Amino acid sequence: MSTISIDQVEKTIDITCDTVIRNEKYFSDLDGLAGDGDFGTSLATGFKVIKKELPEIDKSAVGAMLLKISMICSKHVGGSSGPIWGTGFMRAGMVAKGLEELTYQNLVDMLGSAIEGIVARGGAQRGDKTLLDALWPIHDKMQEMDGSDLGAVLAAITAEADKAIDETRTLVAHRGRASQVGQRSADTPDPGIVGIATILYDWCKAYGVDYSPNAKELNR
Amino acid sequence: MKKFVNDPENFVPDFMAGIAAANPDLLEAIPEHQLIKRRNVDASKVAIVQGSGSGHEPAHVMAVGPGMLTAACQGPVFAAPPVDACYETIKSVATDAGVLVLVNNYQGDRMAWDMATELAEAEGIKVKQFHINDDVAVQDSLYTVGRRGVAGNFFVMKACGAASENGASLDEVLAIAEKVNNNVRTMGVALTSCIPPAKGDPIFEIGDDEMEVGVGIHGEPGRERAKITSADEITETLYEAVQTDLPFESGDRVALMINGLGGTPPAELYVIYNKAAQLAAETGLTVARNYVGEYCTSLEMAGASLTMLKLDDELEKLLAAPAETATRIF
Image (cartoon, rainbow over all chains, first blue to last red; front, top):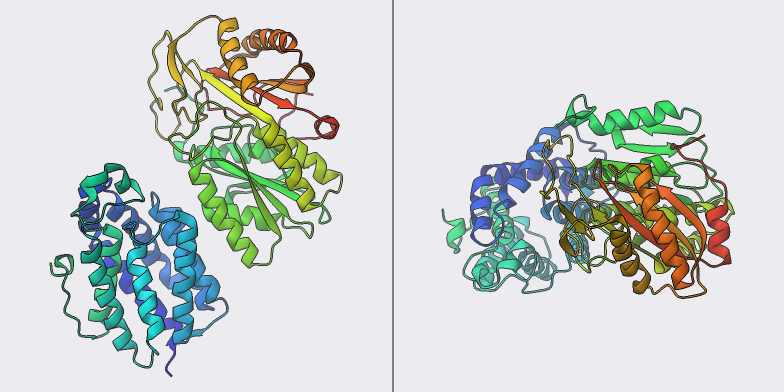
């Protein structure tokens, strides 16, 4: 089975930075519908630093690189997104400690550990309308697949995130700032879930994986 | 705004450099991680660390020294230190005996220290965390779920620092932290607001004839905005809130602290102490130790807090043990 090199991880993070930076205003506007409208800016502020520092970051192992990114997130991403994304990268980095390349199983374990950490940090549960409602089905799907075709995995998990946008659209948020506006959060998509889906869809485009999105937030 | 500030962005590094310069034999500053640590860390003893936003001095970087904290880091004024600073602080003093992280209960501080503790554990460092929540004013607040950690943190640091010097294990020091926190209560009052140098404006508005009863150490609202009354009446309000909360009962031996919030002169603090000591005597308490001065401040805010700690023989000995910090009178 093919493995994922540290260069590929770096390239994918760089693509992610571009996605987050390009969507700064859009993510903030989405957040403004029910939250405090800072999600896009908070995230982009941190990912601009990641983009800038990425070439110089310690790349002796995937773990070291992700831990450094975690530190940048927790320092430069504002609001509650900082500790949430920082914890995700930190937990993934701990699983990848010392690894110079990743197997598919490593990836599955990294995501599993990141999810556990984010749950512990923020206390969200299924259906609370947070980015975890995208990450859980993605992790489930990855566990079902054998990873022999990474392109197929990417298409399948992008579909899960895409589906999560519409499935959670009408839910009332129970966590984060959006939880304080109650019913106003119904009928607006969660910006964290849209963020995950947008990142994955951009990975598809960058790696030449065919995917036709359903949610209107991905068909802009 | 009139302040002794160069570039407001450099306010925190500037004062930290000053602390290190004034205590070259005792302390070492590591500016890139906004931390101050003791020069001679004994590997056989539990290291005690703390860290929060700046603006509360002498908590916490000025509370580093033998018998107190082993290291502390600072965030910007009133903002939690970043995770990497917290992690480096733990790492810089990681001993075989372990590290106890004391965190005043504020969301931002807790998240930063949670991540740092997790990272340190993954590195094989023996570390435990304890949350201090002594403020009786409000149950939840602007920046907390649960009660806030305020001036009572001094007693936790002092008792844990002394226990560590006595060679107590990590679990034993943690048990001391729990005991102090379970028996310490605080409430504060603000007469004025304060101005973080980088912000340049007061953090809240308050009228000339008003006071904020139960104020937090970042100016967060407390129980009520009231018309200012006499010192004795204000002291009664603070004392009653603190005394009835634990409650402190006739026959108890206590430590009584009147803490200035930064802009109140010592003489006024003694006016408050005088009344508080009378009230304690009326309740039948014996004030075995007293503390009047600045321990946990909010920049130049005029105001004070009243803290009481119920003592037993063990805590009384730990509080009486010698200690040395960056702040000295002699």
